[in-house]
Image 1: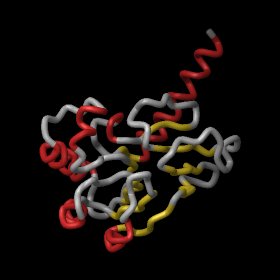
Image 2: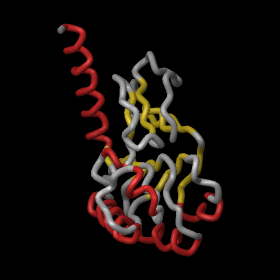
Image 3: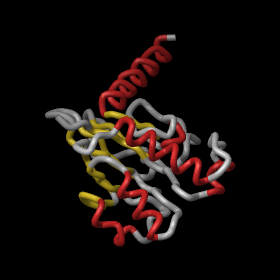
Image 4: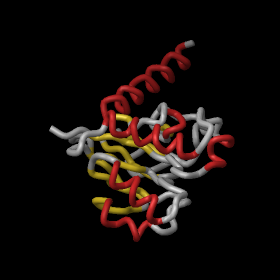
Length: 178
């Protein structure tokens, strides 16, 4: 059985992201290799990865090499730095701006690169995952940042996502009681 994972904002090859996001790397090549290793340590070839934008700052050849090394089927949500995604269509199952993933009969997760205050069915059991903010935007009861800067540069399994939503709900309830 295949697993489902979520991630975003690797910014492969982006030297300035190391300092601007306080990433624990000295060089972009070190960051790239560590993030590829962490991805492949948790994702198998049969897994599904929903990627929420801003994959690479490398040119075409180096980005192709990285994409060939990453395990799993990748479903891509466009980010603000994804101007040339069409050249990588060979690697993605699809490329979209927004997607509603059905988790079960009553639960769905809206996937977008950007955080939203409201989304389809947001008041009817739907959740929201986003990237883009690199941990600088607090999550809510029903949405949070799935970007690598928040998750030790590793794709996050669906079970952890759903557990996190449950914890966020309990935290909000505890604040209301206090």
